[in-house]
Length: 435
Ligand code: DLL
Image (cartoon, rainbow, N blue to C red; front, side, top):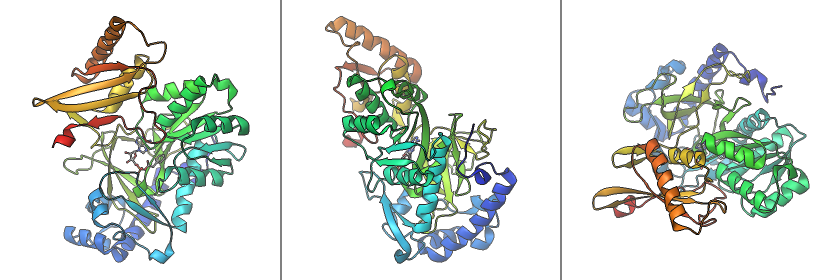
């Protein structure tokens, strides 16, 4: 039986939703134009005024906003409310350049937590659940967002943050956690640790996990589901749009419903900026129509995915986005071929390896090199050099079939690749260091 957090919105007819979006968009554009000089300048440069935006059909007339704009306007340049009305800031986990700082009024926090409450309810969460939040807390939005959503639903909330994995499992057992929220790479690590502690999924009460903040494959989903004995659901969001909860998966587990009453999505061709028809893969662009302090109009996320309005078995009518296959700037171009780390992950798990790997790309004598370090588990580990070489060759062949280019595979000993407690680092592109 499907449960909704806000049935009226989540199952609203397309017609009513469009009407709601039209009204909210018109008001939001006016709010931004009047209160954010930076955005007014962008609109003036494009020759658009709030009067030109009468409904969502006019969305394409607005200028795009990029991460560069956010950096340029740092820290207060995109603020649309007086600082005295703001009650919180959160920030990106990015390590390069200036951080992105997002501001929230109490109203913004409420609607953000509401979006997370929808996600928790969609995986079956109720006030009878014990929800263990092991996303990082602090400036990162993962912990605070799911924590707030969990409170709203009325779950007993465990604000664990990430790390100290054995203690996570201890609490999970002692308090009977039924829902876990963390990155998929940390979920895989928790599953691995559970088994190393001599425990099985029967020793814990978890039934569902809400995993996001980084790209992960269907193969990874199955592997986590098996190791923790749960159903694994995806959740998407970004600091710029509040945090987690822009979209969430339902019982169908095939793409994430976008909270369209708060965020209008578009898919564009990343090269030309042209809006693409439903179903085509391109860059996801968001317009937030309800946020007060830090509303972004036509914000380019750089995430690549597709949208679909196909009927969903859960009954929600909210549009769905496919799993992002990574950011457009995560895509590696190796010897002229486009490579997503997720393609490599798919092959590794299919071939029976755990998702513990590190991809290294370099340029030697003007030619790109692709080295993939893959960890063996104790059963795969062998003293015989020849066994290992055979396995490396086999895996390299399977990856070549997927990518069209040959990698060098290095099978490394168990436990030699650093585990992730937050967003996993899967790629080291040394070419960037030489440039
Ligand atoms: O990662 C917010 C979040 C926290 C989402 C917890 C889900 C759960 P940022 O640190 O600003 O915010 O990073 C945002 O992470 O543009 C995507 O590239 C990536 N990302 C987020 N969720 C997913 C997902 C948070 N489910 C960036 N699948 C986004 C793939 C994701 N990538």
